[in-house]
Length: 193
Image (cartoon, rainbow, N blue to C red; front, top):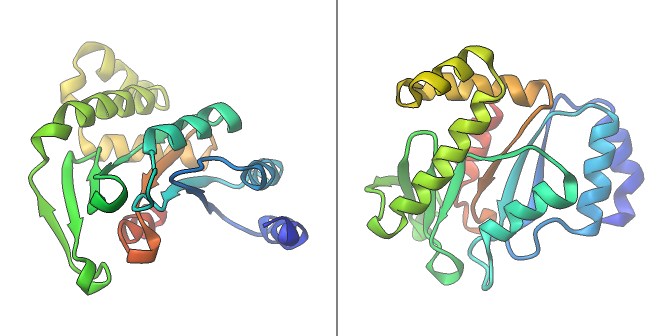
C-alpha cells in the first residue's frame, strides 16, 4: 500500500530477496509498479506469486502478461493454476510436469500429487516449452543442449539455470496459488529456499 512506501524503501536496502505478490484478477497494479522499481533500485532478486487464483475472474495468463508488459520483467512461469475461480484446487508444476491438489479442509497441509488433467495437457506443454526456452537463454551449456536436443534437458538443469538467473536478476520465476486457503504457499517457500 502507498502508505508504507518509506518502510518498503528501508526494508529493500537490507533484503537478500523478495517475493512480489500480485492479484490473480488485477495483475500488476500501480503500487506494484512502484515497489518493483524500488526493488530494481536496490538490486533485490525476486520471485513472483500470482495470488487469489480462487477469486472469481482470476486469470493467470492476464496477470502473467501484465508482469511482462507493465514491469518489463523477464518473467518465467514455473507453475500454472489447476482450475480458476471456484474451481481452483491446485497447481501444475511446469518443471516436473506434475499436478498437485490441496485439501481445503486441511488448510493446505495435505498436498496430493494427481495425474495431469487431459484438458490442461496441451496448455501445460505450451507453458513448459516457453519455460525451457527462457531457462536456456540464461545458461550457455543449457542453450547448446536446447539447440541440439531439448528433450535431454533435466529438471535439475532447469532449476540451476533459473536459480542463476534469479540471483543475477535476469529472470523472475512466476508461481501461483491462493494464499488464504494455503494453496501453493508451500511451493513458494520451497522456491525461496
